[in-house]
Length: 296
Ligand SMILES: [Zn+2]
Ligand SMILES: [Zn+2]
Image (tube, rainbow, N blue to C red):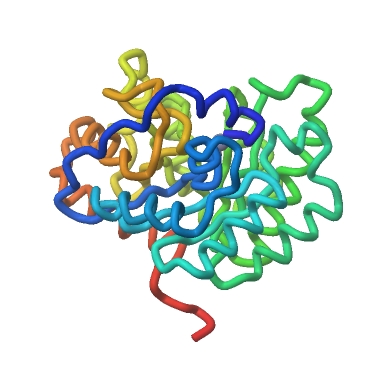
């Protein structure tokens, strides 16, 4: 999601209670802690103690590993700094497609994303991609140019690519096929049907399911998840957006991802603890280990 949507998204009532903890650790592969905490703290920047409390609450619910995702230069810097100081957090850095559509992925911004991508705990470039829902046709050329630039940065640094695809399934595949996809591609907040899932799976991409998997009208997503090999699945919150049932419409947080993990266990028929193990294994394959320091 984009930062520009955050002020709207964060005024939706009190944060829901944490669910029963998962039986084994799982991963939130995509969260925006800065936007979560900005919302809670009414426009004041989040301080370290508030961030740490949010991360501790996730760990208490069985989610000790998070990927913090930047959407512009400022939030990408913040994400990289958080990951550098916090063992439970890895970072992804990018200019979001909606921001790119407004001209914000200029040469200076891309140079800074490239610089951040070299940091040891920045393990993905994203979220980047195409969004033909919020960005109108006048922004599509800039958005695609930005997506292509981010693909190249990911490949240069040997990092995973976190793809935002909103109403642009075929176009996203066209660009990735044309550029040559990086070794690890995560389709964040997967939003396609079983046919599109198959096209992603055959390319080796990983499908990350958000709270939308639990929505009553999302049978097509459950079919897509059921058809995806377990070793190509991830879960995410995209917090503060897309809060899973039974708290749909209230602010999301990483500690709520167990609702989505439980829904995924039901859909795939994989026993819950085994699914948690698989999600952690998949995340560490894609993003690298949380506690490994590749420089040390
Ligand atoms: Zn997104
Ligand atoms: Zn996002």
